[in-house]
Image 1 (cartoon, rainbow, N blue to C red):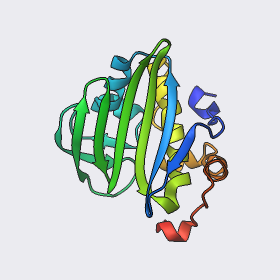
Image 2: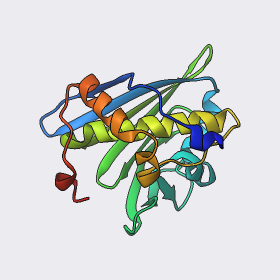
Image 3: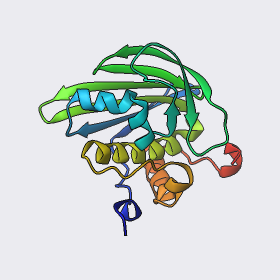
Image 4: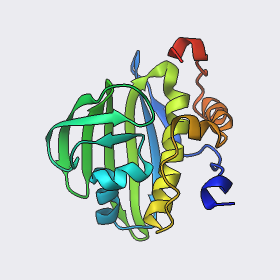
Length: 184
């Protein structure tokens, strides 16, 4: 059995929600054992994004401007997105699928504190938290030199994603949406 087949996400942790009417921001913080420069490359380099992120990028995200992001594993056409801010090794902000993502990197004595703010519809907060949780864990294995490969969509469902969404709903104090609401 491969490492990927053995993968089970850890428990929900480290998340909070900043609430502002219908625009809620999911905030997830992770302590990574790697310097900001390595984390930055994983956040911006299209080749590395294909190893952990839920989308493919048409170019490096490290420069301000237009970029196409294609949600992995779907028939959706590429979304025209905008990298709004890019401060190498420190801050990255862009839109994706109508959502706003902000990544902050802070050097620590043991590596990098990575903080993600994801402005997504409030009814999908628990789903977003579970999805990004898995992405972060896969990112960490990539940075450790033991890539699992991207785990999103149907692959995430096989990796205990339903349990993780339920845990995040309880942790964040939000309700789970039903599948009919999502159009899936």
